[in-house]
Image (cartoon, rainbow, N blue to C red; front, side):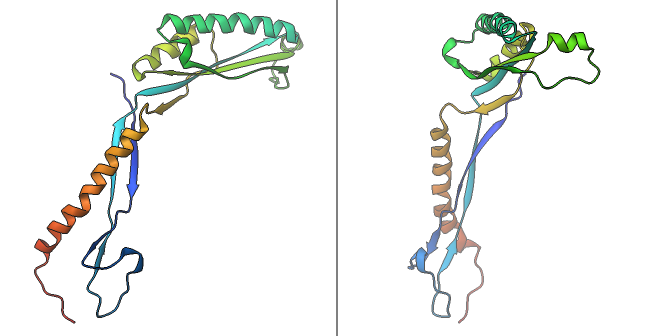
Length: 190
């Protein structure tokens, strides 16, 4: 079973004034019998989009070799994603470039360094259903994506969650206003 994170949206501060006073100008003195009540609420829902990072690094003796090998690897990864059901419209390139390699491991032999003079880096953000995320990552890694796996959980309709929170929040002050007097058993004196 896939564990999906819950996304939350909080709406803060809905003020209720029990009495006849303006919330913007509450004066505290012995003649003012106003009580201000503030409330917050939270609505949560399960994420319905998994934005996964798929990428790779490939090294070459020169920039042309790195680019050629990277092109082949790029096509293999994209084909693997398509076979899992990922649609092209959900794949967005987030970076690609060839540069001289400056990060060598101290333990590497000169022959190894000579073969890794240039590096091509390619990455994509792939938006899929949460149920497909794991399969897409596994397929991409099997095809050679050696820099993959980060997932950003999102909502397709964030406004619906905001509306849910607003509805929950708007009903709270009325309930508080109705329930509060029932809990007051003592009288307030001047």
